[in-house]
Length: 436
Image 1: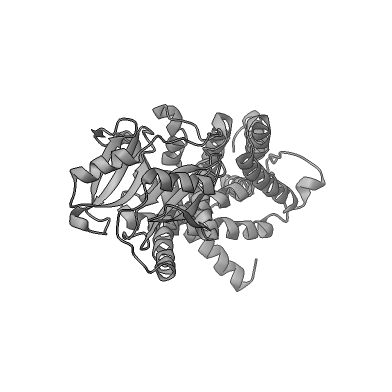
Image 2: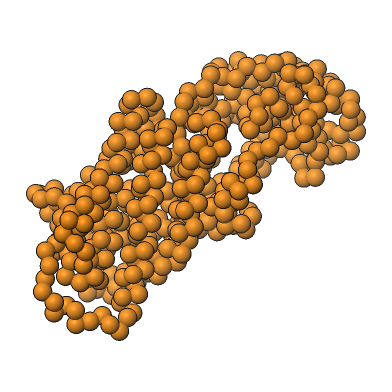
């Protein structure tokens, strides 16, 4: 604690924490609303297994739309997430290959009738999402939010190491009541170590979500260059029917559902080949996609490509960040941990302000009050033993509940509630003994 390095490290922790704290109030409150987005809007839960969606014949509808816009080039096709009965076709104006300023045509997949764009979300929920995701600053805001996530991860990791220097005279979960400053310092360290693993996951997934758009663009251009070099020839239409291409992609990856299709020789597809994205149908796989390359003329499978690890990590970040994959019980646990994490910046700001205050006081002369504790024994006396157990338990619960469903999922979510149990236990003892 006396070394220059530790003092510098500690000071960086304080000021980085101060910067992050200002943002956490926004992220935690908006995140709590987004956590229950499905319940508020009456949407479908992500916790269940979904069967592979069977699409009706679509090629006849596509040909009618192409005849209606004869000068436009088809660029991409997808089913709307907010309304599975509606599909969207992106059309390049006057034969353009570029997606920017392209025409969007929506139609009913059963009748082929052109319809208006479906309503995706409420204006209030959209505002909350944009505030949480990008602080209303657009694409640059996402990168900024990712930077805050990186700093938050640093604050948690540095706090984990700093904790050991202050925990030599106390056991885990002990909060001394001698002074308000000592009380808040011990409480801050206890809360930070209790939610360390969960908070670090939130920080790192927030970082990945912030840079996900950039990662996708990098992948699109780098992968497209490889595909264009591999398949340089661009045969002229007529191309294989849309139904044949989708059936071939489904055959290549049985048990998956269609996600997105890029037509040949567009901004995001190589010459002479369709690119079809297929996703799984479980909480674990529904956000992971595989890339199916289909010959444009024959409609036969050319190859299946997996996404790189960094893109898979970015895609899995959303459910892990919002906790919307394990049903209502897991969401409640997520909300409790979010509320606990909200007290971290509050207590941290109080400690910072109290250190700057000139009243720091002579209150140290007051009679020592009994400490609040959550347990006794060797597990609590060793500074890092219980925090490590909680961290490992939290990681097991998060990953396990992501991979399971039903009763097992609920039981694993109970393990994630362990930090909340310890905090609640401390609060109950504090209420019984009285505040500082």
